[in-house]
Image 1 (cartoon, rainbow, N blue to C red):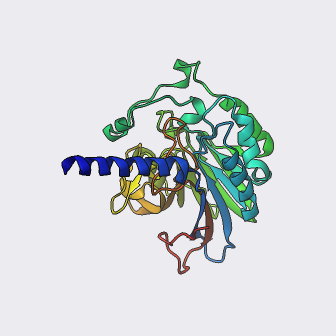
Image 2 (spheres, rainbow, N blue to C red; image 1 turned 135 degrees about the vertical axis):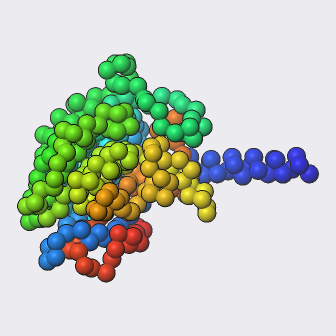
Image 3 (tube, rainbow, N blue to C red; image 1 turned 120 degrees about the vertical axis):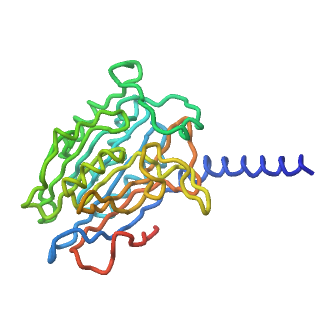
Length: 313
């Protein structure tokens, strides 16, 4: 009897892994949220948040799906990193973004923009985040992020790595500040710290990994909206439990989607993208479909709050 139970459990587990690897990791979806974060009377601004593409040269289905996101006609693209997972993938990243590169855009880097992934024990994620290797210490693994960044910049996207910038988007002044990757401990928030831009309709913080030290700093400096990725939404979720890990120190309830972060007397809206890809060494998702998010920023005082339900497509 016990043998049958163990065999059945193993079969179910194998089936879940097969489903996650063969079906769900390519079951791309667009999430839609409405965020009332603009001043009263402001016109809506549509922001396409992309993260964790982890593109490989052979990912033709993913490339085609991302190309089609241009049909959403966003006003702005925010890219929170981890674009590629192979040194030959950067031209395909540009191919995937396609017409989105013609739109206003901002970007920051993630750990897998700098270094190609390596095989890891997946149980290691349960031990919590550790200090990963730095690109300068592993030149054999370094990816052509400089080339990719030059192409983004040439297309008109703004590199927010430790920079504060303002853009006019759809007739609305948006102020941004961004950091380098917190997972590699390359973030230097002191380079961009300070009060928000008082002339901007909204102040937006952009980073790859939502570590609490960064979220605290953003909220303390009264950012209206924080955008991040990195977590993959946990990548593996269980019914009734949700994500098992976050791959950083954020709590599991905020591993993806819209939430808030409070520091002192200020609460920032926050969106963490579950991302579009996986490591090539862990090519599966379960109850956590790969996603892009269309965030419609609206005037404060509307009926939809930060917890507005997404519309699935």
